[in-house]
Amino acid sequence: MTPPASLCLLLLGELGIFALGHFTKGQNSSTLIFTKGNTIRNCSCPVGVRDCDYSLASLMCSCKSVLPFAMEQTRYDHLTIWFTDASTLGQLLEFTLVQDLKLSLCGSYTLPTKYLAICGLQRLRISAEAKRPFREQSLLVPSRRDSRSSYKGWQTCMFISFLDMALFNRDSSLKSYSIDNVSSLTRDFPDFPYFKTSPIPNNKSCVVTIIY
Image (cartoon, rainbow, N blue to C red; front, top):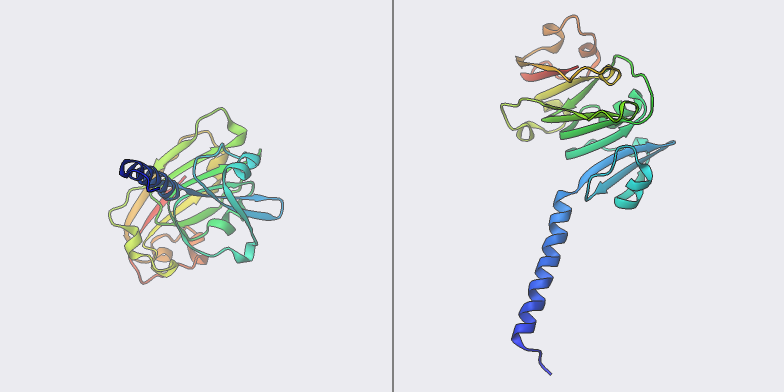
């Protein structure tokens, strides 16, 4: 028996809503990366997860274990990283292209004054588990051009943000300043030794933002 046309239309409409919901869910998902012991977990999360709640992340997100040397440099629209030490964070994030970044320090740790280089950063949020219930801090990084159009690996990273890791030890608000048309990092910042050891080309004009 052939079902009525109205029933077919109703079923098609419900299937369309179901498919659209799954598509939207996939589009809105964000990446969460955290370390648990010696394991790095890379997760895709359809909803936000409470900071440093590893059990909830495993329940709510689709996660997989990744070996440290298997981490590939890639591009992220929305990235959250839970970390416990500066060296691991540097391994996960150094010279990565990410537009919207949240960093959560899990545990009571004192971080050294060490600068972390991030490409194409537009918004930064930070929180520290030891400083709860204080709210997370947020900072918008000014950008005059589309950083995605000029990115083809770190060699052409034209928007570079340097994040002072020691800011997690302080209660003061996030601050930043930007310098446009920087043609030579080692020449224009002679007192900043970090630039002397960073793989940044000196023949490209770039915008440098210091976050502290």
